Length: 243
Image (cartoon, rainbow, N blue to C red; front, side, top):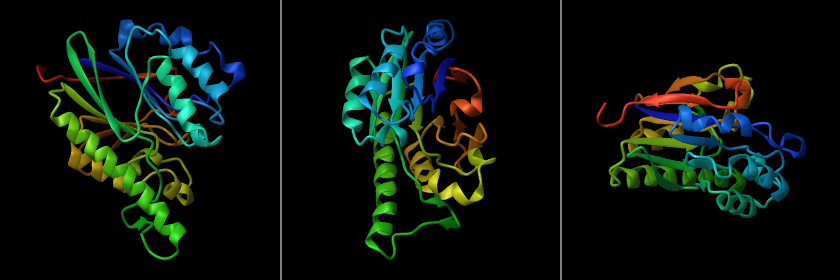
């Protein structure tokens, strides 16, 4: 059994230093990997990223992350990414990483993702250039996620996980105002997950949402935004190829 710890939307700032580290130090006893589902900082500054980096540095489990919209706010995502990578995290944007734990190969494909809405209530590539680009950006994220999942198919992984910030399904948004669903996720991410193949999809972003959901293709989706799970991380158990 492979144990996947996950949390998103920790929104760390100067006064947050050290608040998660004690819990994260228990991870080797209960998890094989830690997934961070974006919005790790409040405003996306390098100073805030350094605070997150100190929380995760030298943990005895692999750490895989994607950025969220907050992590882009200061328009320095490359610096934020570099700081987290220097602390040992695999930070993904349209890429895949394979980490090992006790001989198990855990494949994670990641992207921040973007909005646009869900089937029957979604934006289309029509009209003003800005609207077209809005949807095309989401499509590029979804296409990259699909490609990363297909890469993992060739990597002999025991499990494959899709890690995003924005939601692939409306199920896990239940509790959020319906009016903002288009800004919380996109069905294109779910299509990428179903056609690319995954054993689990993990996301954040929807603070007032619901933990459990599922794609139309039957992939389990979990909203791990910290306000939803109400703890430092949640652990999900996935059977490997041997059971």
